[in-house]
Image (cartoon, rainbow over all chains, first blue to last red; front, top):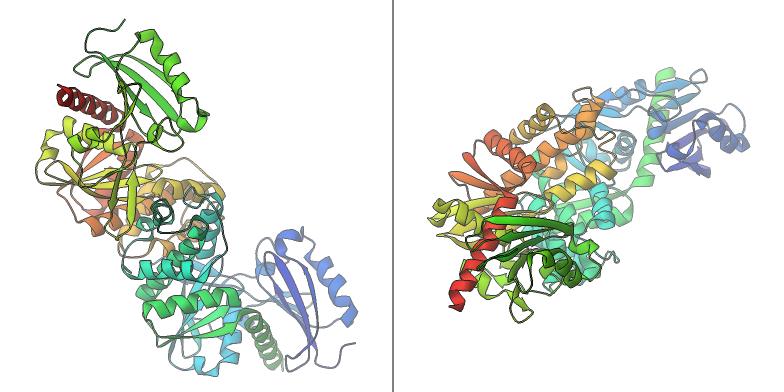
Length: 303
Length: 303
C-alpha cells in the first residue's frame, strides 16, 4: 500500500510505540501502535516487522526515543551540544544497510556543570523548529514537561544546552508513597493554582521547605485532604519553572512541548510567575514533525 | 523497686517506645522498650501497664511523641508558638487523675506563612535547653534532622518559630523507588561529600534541577552507581541547610539534635557551606532531659 517516497516514522519510548506511514512530505497515511521498549523483551526487530509489514517490504524508517538506548534495538550514542538538525541526523545509528535509522539522544554539560542527557526530546525539539519557524531566530527557551522534564535553550535554531528536572517522577513518588499525601484526589485546578501561588510568594525558597505544606495545610483545615496532590503539583511545577528560569535566564515566550494535560499546567505556572507568555506545541505532533525533518535531512544528504 | 520522687519518662514515637524509670533528679534507674504507636493497635494503656508494673503501682509518668496524636493514647492538642517550658508543660494532657501526662506538640505559622507542626521534637528542644544552658541566651538556631527534619529558632530560650523539611522521607522515597538510583549502596563519606560540594557550588539552585545528577553522573562515569544514594543524601542535606538558613537566618553555631548518624551528616554539611560551627546533642539524651524538665515543671507548678 505504500507509494514512492513513503517512509515509516516511529516514536518508540519506554512505554509506547507509535508507528506512522508517512508520504514524502511527512503527511501521515496510516498508523499503528505497539509495546514500549520496556515491554519489548529484546524483540524490537520482530515487533517492528510485524507492525510495518502491512505497509510493504523494505520501506525506509526513522525511529526515535528509548529504542536507541541500551535497552532498545540498537544503541545510538548521544550527540553533543551544540547540536543542529544535521548533527543529529548525521549521528543516527544504522540498521539493515541504513534502511532503518535510529535518532541519537543529546548530551551536554548543563548550567550546573553536570552531565545531562535526553533521548526522544531532541526529535520533538527539531519538530518544534519545523512547526514554529520563529524558533530559528535568536535565543529561545523550550520546556518539555514530563516524568523527567527538559528545559532547552536554542540559539539561532541550534540546541545549545538543556537541563533536566524529574518533576513528574517526584510528583508520582510523593503522591503515591509519601505520608504527606494521605488521599490522592483529582488534580483540581483551584488546588493546583493554590500551590502555584503559595510557591510564587517565595520563589527563591527551596522546594524541600514547602513540601510539608501538603500535609500541614490539610491538618490546619486550609486544604481539603483530597486536594493535597493538586497542591503538590502546583508546588512542583512552580519550583521547576522558578529554578529553570533562574538557571537558564528568562524569555519573552516559553515554548511548551508535550501532552496538553501537562503543558496546560506549565502555561498556568508561567502565568503565575509573571514570566511572560507561553506558546504550546503538541508533543506527538512535534515528534512526528521531527522525524520527518530528520528523514528529509537524510534524503537530502544522501543525494 | 521505686523510691520517693521517682517517675516514669516515656519517649513514644511512631515506631518505638522507650520507657525510663527516673529518680527525682531525672537520673535513669531502669528502662524498657516496647512497640511504637503505629504498632500499638489502640492498646497504649495496656502496653504501658505491662512494661511499667514492674516498677510499682501509681508512679507518675510523662510521655512525649506520637502517643499524644490522634493515633496515640490521648490527643494532646498542639501548643502555639512562641512557647516556653511552662507553656508546654501547662498544656500537657492528663490521664488517670493527672498521674500520667502527655506532652503536647507545637504549632506555628512558619517563615513561608504556612501552618507547621512538630510532635516529640518540642521535648528534645526543652532537653537541649537543659543540657546546653547557653541556648537560653539570645537567638539560637536548632536543627533536628530526621524523616521530617525540624529547624527551630529560640529567642532567649523561647521556641519562637520552626520549619519542617521532609528530607529523610525524600531520601528514602528516591533511593528506594526512583529510576535515578539504580543501586542502593552504603552511604560512603566521599560520595556524600561530593553531593554536598556540588550543591554548595550553586546554593540558590532549586533541588529539582540537581536531582537528575544522581543518574547522569553515573551514566557519564563520574559516579560509581552504588554511590548514587550517598550523592543524593549530600544534595538533600545541602538543600535542607541552604534553604533553612536562607529562610531563618544564619547563626554562629547551629545546634544539631538527633541520632549521631544523622547529626554527623548535617555537621559535615554546615562545614561545607561555611555556615559556622555546629554543636551536637544526642537526640535520645535530649528527649530524656526534656521529659525530666517537664516533670520538674509540673511538680513545681503543683506545689
